[in-house]
Amino acid sequence: MKITYLGHSCFCFEAKDGTKLITDPYTRVGYELPRGLTADIVLVSHGHFDHAYLNAIGGMPTVLSESGNYTIKGISVKGMDTWHDPKQGALRGKNVVFQFVMDGITFCHFGDLGEEYSDKTAQAVSDADVWLIPVGGTYTIDALQAREYADKLMPKLLIPMHYRPADGGLDIAPIADFLSKVQPEKVIACPDGEYLLTADKIEDMAGEILYMERSK
Image (tube, rainbow, N blue to C red; front, side, top):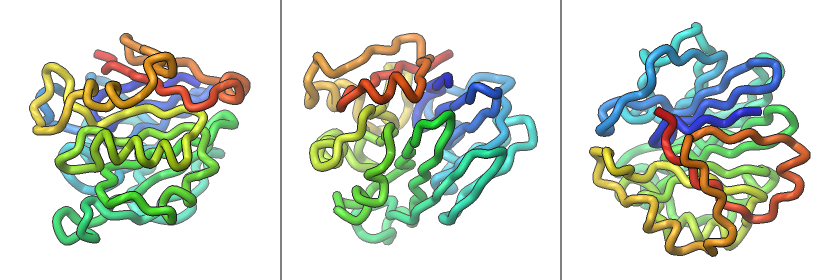
């Protein structure tokens, strides 16, 4: 399968059969999504402008934005309620963490997770092979908190997201804050924003960190 990082918390996952799943499409973050995006499934962790810009996605996709268990085009998806802030939603409301299986690989997209570390949340996603986790702070957990999740229960592959690139317009931290807190030899650089991953390949990974720059 091909993973394309579209910026912020937005990724496109394309399965071997061509099925496409997109997470958290955005607008007004200092840069724009590429034109002509289409998907079969769109996951929306919460309704804020930088995670729920559905007008950018064509193809009449099925949109999931609530917790629950779903099966769409052979892809199983599980949504779990969490909080967007450390005060049980009093500041920014609810966030849905989505776990899904494509091409034999289990992914977990943490959305805008903002609550303090909890064993309950960590254990709920402990069977995921790949974590996509926010690291920018301010509106989500920051680099140290993301590191805490990883230290307690490291997946085979971790992909940081929701950080500020050079042309970003949101007051969140750059990726350097997170990369400075991990072992350099564990980092896989992906400057073109596209990465091919298979179930066989993921089995040989053990705590690697995939640093993806935005595909433009």
